[in-house]
Image 1 (cartoon, rainbow, N blue to C red):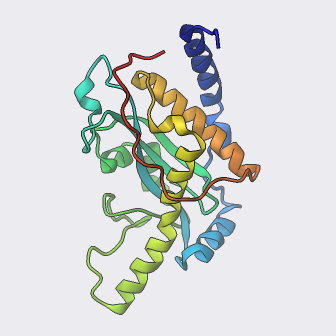
Image 2: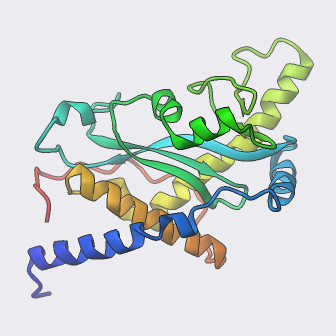
Image 3: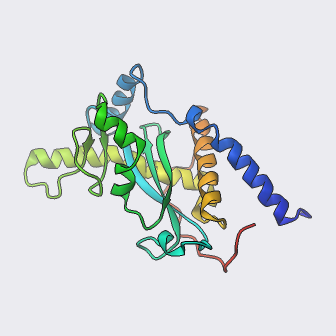
Length: 229
């Protein structure tokens, strides 16, 4: 189109940085006045009472970084940023951590997050649902490793139906912003672009912009080595 890729890179950086600065305005955890409605929506979703959020991590694949490349290799052998997301039943993102290399485990990201520090000190009025990668806490509910009784089976079923909201959220986010399937930028740029997409995603959710709610896209093919814009 006649635009030099350096200019494109500068524009992407400027826009991403501007959107990322709006994160605290558009990504907020439910307030005390909103908690009851959040719980009701989650209960309608999967019969799980007292739920105020669902949590999981998702990997944003990136090109091999120039520095400390090994830190970004995830368990699948690809370079990535491991992003922690907390979502609600409407698939809005209510909390996020976007800074950790792909080799870092979900549980460590969680334990070093502001969310963990805050809720360990000031326990929330409700619980967050997580998979077995996370610790079981008074405010974090994980599934039974083995459901041996009818009540445990009912709990696991309700937990799974409700927690699937975060899996849907991750899928919708990456379909809405296909760039998140592979970013040809250094880690800092990838984090800023991801934050920008999170802000735009929440704007879309709040404005009820339709989304494609189908299975997750296939793993993208890694292009030839490309060191950014």
